[in-house]
Image (cartoon, rainbow, N blue to C red):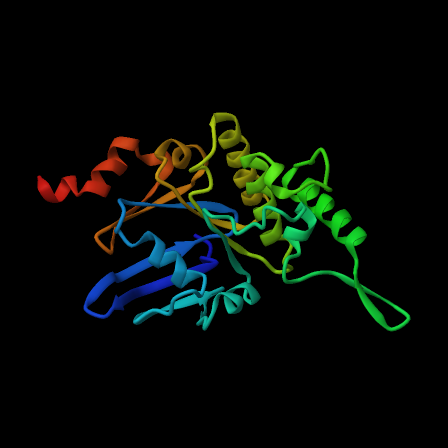
Length: 251
């Protein structure tokens, strides 16, 4: 089997006397969707925050392309090609889509030595990335982001992440949680498109229906530990629920 794009080995995270993660391994491959599932408190969020540099592990190591790597911040992880789209999306509703996409990384131009925002270029780039990478075409790029549908907002947040050159791993935290059936279907298509482009997509979701539709493998967390990793095609929702609740232990 090909080498994992990213590996987490023996990851442990303690917050004072509380152990949130204990000796967890994770592997994600280029061109696959790895789903992480588990009950609240199973350690999913802590695990992905370590993967994306928000937290640093108490113990354990990470590897990227087989080489040891460590992140001191989320910005550090982005620089190495790992980013995340969280459930909150972190969009400024009063700004237009292009302004949101380049928020904090605005494109500029200089006239007579004076620097101005290049709004025209940012709008054209936003439209290009949405369409070329995600197949999404907004009716207007000059409207407040709050007027967009839930699926369009999700696409905008994804576009902001994939615009970074060198993005290789994208973590998606509950991307369909607040969406209706049609918007959910569109978002799952976006995830499949990112996979086809060679990204490693790490999907955190409580919806096992969504997980079984788009994932290649499923990593199950339970009580801060990995309860198992299975190929999606080789298991059922019942099997995954058994791992989540510890049915085998109970038996």
